Length: 205
Image (tube, rainbow, N blue to C red; front, side, top):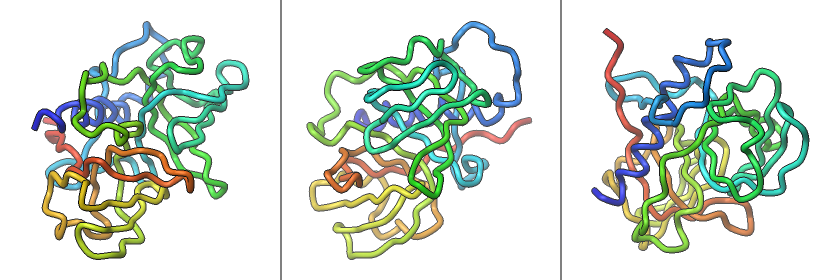
């Protein structure tokens, strides 16, 4: 469970953004703990077509609020409609950020929300497989447990005998929402270190 806590913390943070994204107030930056994400069990899923990811920004270009940067395997763009939960000027190469966005036909993600992620744990237990975190709907599933290939938010993901499954591997099927922590590969896919259920948010009262 200690390996899953940082993953759930990030997801829990990003989902509240979906409820907060209508806000037009550029108030003081908040940490992701003030935001959150949901699953398809007991709550509502991330907004249709959206994926969340976190990692170090790289290859940054542009001027606020219109930026382009890489986040692990994800190429991200921001624009005037993006909600920044951290100061846009704080985004620079090497800074860890979390984003929720929509994948475009060219593979680029247009960010709906950019926010600071929770603190990095000192040891994930999966060295080399903790560079990127994704949460989204499973698609294009193939293979046999534990060696699966599928997509999360349009990004290809692979699992193997080293992957830690925090839900039964046999329960992974097309259309469910899951969390993946993994490493970017040369084909821009993700090799999974951990696969877990997407967290559940309590329905609003």
